[in-house]
Image (tube, rainbow, N blue to C red; front, side, top):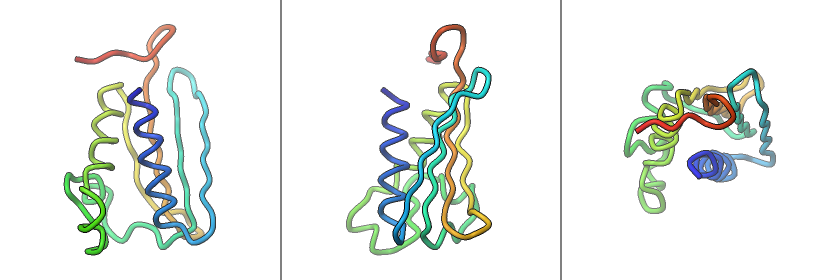
Length: 112
C-alpha cells in the first residue's frame, strides 16, 4: 500500500510539471524495488534536501492546490522500507525521482 502511495505521488508530480512526457521505470535490483519517474519539465531548482522537506513548494501557486507533503511522505515511506528517495535532474533536463524499497525475504520489510 505504501509503495503504491509513493508511486501515485511521484507520477502525479511528474504529470503536474511535465511539458509533454512522463516516463516510469520499475525494476527489481537484487532485493531492492526501484521506481523511477522522469519528466521533461524544467526540473528541480532547489537541492535534494530542500525538495523533500515537509511543506516545501517550488511554485507559490502550489500553495493553493497542494499541501507540500507528498515528497516528504514519499521519502519517509521509502525509509520505513529500508530504502531511500533520490531527487535530481536529468542531463537533458526535467526531473528524475527514484524511490527505492528494500525487500527482505519473500516480501517487503516491515518497520515499526
